[in-house]
Image (tube, rainbow, N blue to C red):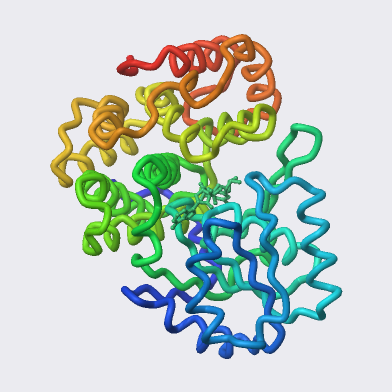
Length: 360
Ligand SMILES: NC(=O)c1ccc[n+]([C@@H]2O[C@H](COP(=O)([O-])OP(=O)(O)OC[C@H]3O[C@@H](n4cnc5c(N)ncnc54)[C@H](O)[C@@H]3O)[C@@H](O)[C@H]2O)c1
């Protein structure tokens, strides 16, 4: 990146503990935050991962919330808030993917309680002060410093059980944060380097994760890339890709990570001419990872095909009959983006993503 004329580098502080076996440190990290009455927030599949946390914290876990739902419906959020208040909780401990983290954030938003996050996917929510709630098929998001976890414990061992299809899709969700960060309004020289490194790390590790899901070295590099991705998402702002996914997730309840994966090459192609420095960085990072890339969009598409990540919006449950409506919703809330966000352009982007195939 050539020297920028000006920038704002605004990175809120959180403590990050990253290690194989870091789950063993959750008890100590909870103590560091003064957690004496902890609410453990973990969905059904993650409950199996909770055993170590439960044995470390014992009766300091005063209540568990398991009704974790993607995109955090407001009624679920309300139930979680009431549960936290009824048990006079002093620390929220989330274990799981973005849905567990998001549920804890919804409680933190209303109560101001501190959060400790233990992520088990590559979604990146644990590094952001962004909350999201869904009501009447519309997703609302906002930023609030209260929802940024005070501490994040990353343990690659916890991701070994993430099914292959979800690992690939979640990895591409993280990739989307990194690609959009490169041209986002809040990019700084340091964030640019960090985002590029995250792209390299994910592109290098995801094929290895797919080949050997229990390879802890590959899992570590993927989770490292996801950490950088979450940080990028939290500190730089995003563009048209995230706006589209925000609309599609809220209005049509599409699965979060697969939807991100399916949209990414087409949103990247949409911005290809308008953000040359960002696209050159994507190409370079992919190539450093051994992923051939004639352009940013086609390199990402090839990576997706290599790891079996979704590349077609129709395949992840989007009804082509909704293209018109979805395009109107995206344009109504048009984000800052390198290329102007207009109805024709978004209609074409969505049609291409529905058709799948190599982005033009
Ligand atoms: N606010 C933010 O900054 C932000 C950022 C990214 C995502 N999100 C939100 O996060 C949600 C999506 O998160 P996600 O993609 O991580 O999906 P998720 O949390 O819904 O998890 C997907 C599935 O994987 C299972 N799972 C998670 N980790 C596992 C593991 N290690 N082993 C086995 N199964 C596991 C879950 O139980 C679930 O069934 C969306 O609601 C999205 O809006 C928010």
